[in-house]
Image 1 (cartoon, rainbow, N blue to C red):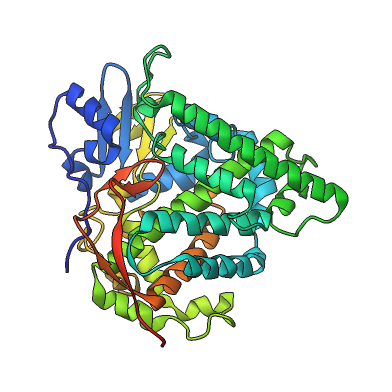
Image 2 (image 1 turned 90 degrees about the horizontal axis):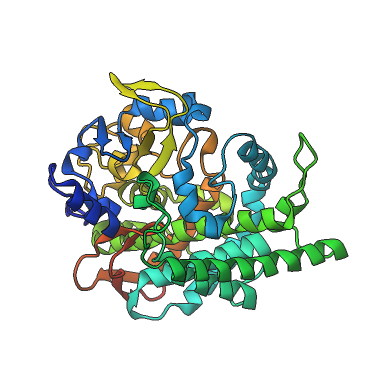
Length: 450
């Protein structure tokens, strides 16, 4: 079995200057090789101290047992604030709890069933756009995932003028602002030049302007009594059950920004890597193609259960290429982790990238093996360390949507086209999500009628 590509980790010992240089280029390749086998690593510099945790017991402690004691780091929020404002992704405490009380019901039981027809329409539109030949599939996946978001959130296709503006501006933003960069861990002076800062701010301002117009248009429809019963309407009209508070216009803009980032960027990343993995594992690809239904017109959400291999391919892709490769929390008091003292304010780094490839948790950690999910060899400790959507109270509220969308889009493409990799293997790097440094190029050959 061939192993999918991953960045070459740095040697276990390099100078602080070299580490900083690598970190600015790409956080994945900046990390030492020992993190793929260590239970915990402590990083000390004159400026900060952080602890990267790979021990499943510590993951449970931070995310599930005592989540309020380990809030999200403000340093992460600072870098994303121009786009996300004070969205549910970056807030903490009572503010975050209030936001989740309003948002969660929109994604609750039965909502995925209601949204699935819009996903199907987006999948059909994607297939009408695909042409045979060599394609850069990250772009294809981005367009399709954005279409799903706009159809399920605002009941408009991506061709809608405002939706198109958001998508194209987001493409400009995506590679200028990583989800986690050096400023998340190292408090830099404000006067220090930051590469791409002006371009990032301009793109964020343009995205939020288009999102504001979408929110305003929906508010007018709600006032007129003719708004579609979609996710945006549900979130804008659902009051906090504890206080009766409704999202203000600016609060709704913040939430739509993170819905678009989380629902589009992460899904696009995973779909593109899944297509690549199938292109390089033709035997699995043929099994996925054979699992696809013959009739998509009558396909319903319950039929997804008849596609277990496709689901496990998507799950395995999330293991190897988790869209959000690292998450940062912060200690609110002095702690002791595996016998080491952590002062209040220390940074806690949880890395799905390393957890999901950890040598002591997984059999053949770098191998693409979707069948592992149906075997006993996937241990309980490994399952506890599988956190592509985070875990605990802050688990991604749209995780079920993402899995349904991913299986649907992946099956549609593989049923219609045979995939073959073209050119050098793509090198994963961390931008807003885990993307390929130079894109992912595949040859798509029609399979013909089935």
